[in-house]
Length: 156
Image (cartoon, rainbow, N blue to C red; front, side, top):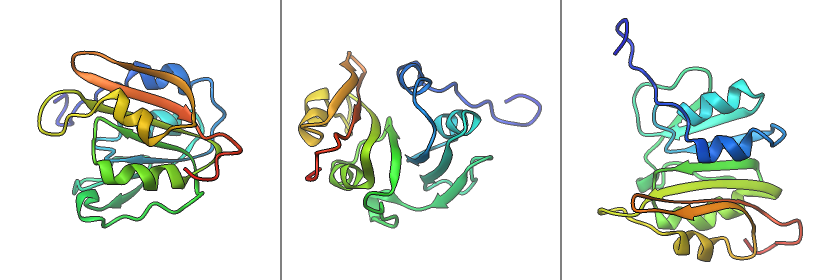
């Protein structure tokens, strides 16, 4: 803490390296936590809605307090230019995330590769098959995928 306020971690470089080259639009940040990615996006002109179970809303974004595991938030279909779900893994959200992205829009996903909520790059690729992979990888701690929904992809 500094001056009575919590320091917010910097946004992940894997996400910022790709998204700094993307024109802003409407973004959804699922399990946004302290808002490190949401605020970075807002600073670049994105209109961001963050969703998390936290009581304290991150500043500078539209915030919806909801428990994703209890399905208290519904991802509107075809509504978002970007959906971020970084370091949160809930497999039953993946189909809704895919439906929520507009044609030509992006997903930016990452999850831990160990522990109770472990995922893998293979799991992300299976859920977003047919999408244009922009950046992806997996190491001993994290798997990530940033992909674009193809204009002709009507199924996912």
